[in-house]
Amino acid sequence: MGKRPPLTKDILVEDLVEAYPELIGPLMHEGVVCMVCGEAYWGTLEELAQSKGITDTDELIASLQEKVTPSD
Image (cartoon, rainbow, N blue to C red; front, side, top):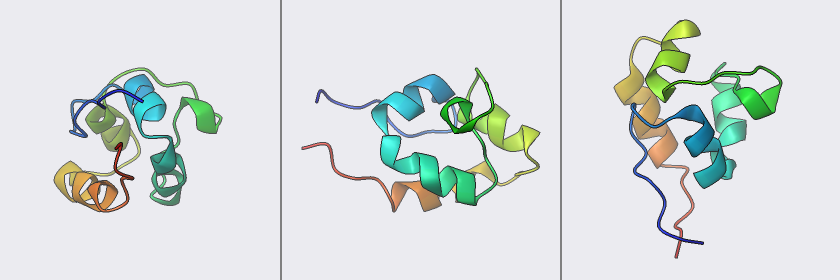
């Protein structure tokens, strides 16, 4: 697997799902349902989170960073 894009609030949801499949479950747990989880969505992680009522995207990113599997 190549180098993954940085996990930021500006990452596109489709890129996040492709690069960080291990985060699909944690995102669902937070109430952030994405395109593979049954709800089509295209845009950034921040936009998706805000559409689900999550206003502190920095806290969400920090929580997700703890769950990221190293790519190497």
